[in-house]
Image 1: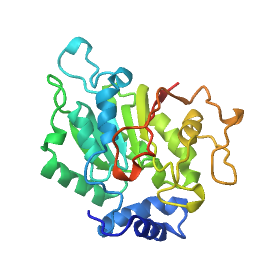
Image 2: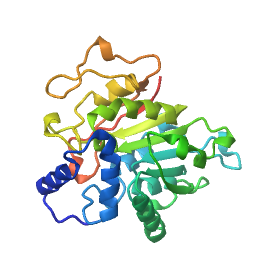
Image 3: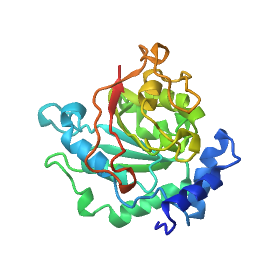
Image 4: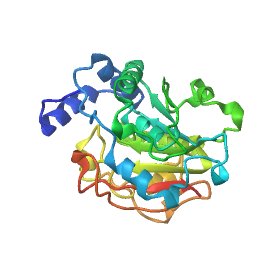
Length: 283
């Protein structure tokens, strides 16, 4: 939905919407924004170009989008998850590359909007199949709590040897959560990602002062590596709200490792010049 407020005014209104609420109330506050429907400053209207370029240019890291050796049939598509998917633009993009793509939202209203988006615009050129012979994967949108997958994981099809998602994409999901929820976020990412899977994060916003509050909460350099390196553990921060880089938060045996890190040439306008893209996988 179009937002006619300035960037400064939008951030102020967003801060006001979440002020005086505890971390446990944050999901319901996001759901309330979708239910009200007249203020959605995080809705960009199209998939992130940084994700499109990563899927196109980093196949040497991500590998093929199916588990089929030498193009054998029938296709056994890899599964991708986008938590906090909103209207589902990035979910539709992942499907166009051949993944069976799943969009998770805490808000039932957001799920409805995502399904409407698929019905209305899912046939647009931007979502056309990217690889001949692979075609488009299936798209599924569903409501659920990211931190409690017991209520929705069976919808993915755990009976077919499912060991976790092959790809998880995070853009503005971590920044939508208070810093106190970061250990739980990292732990759940580790739980949901397959042993050979990849987590793609577009780091945003890296430029904000951590003391300015959120959402979006600032994600200064080091946050992703520190938390994903030690999923579920408390990570020390200094007084300015930045991660303390020392031996105490070096990657653990159960953590993730960053396999690449670059600044995307294309991304959403709000993150140009400051977004970073690290594909991360389990150690």
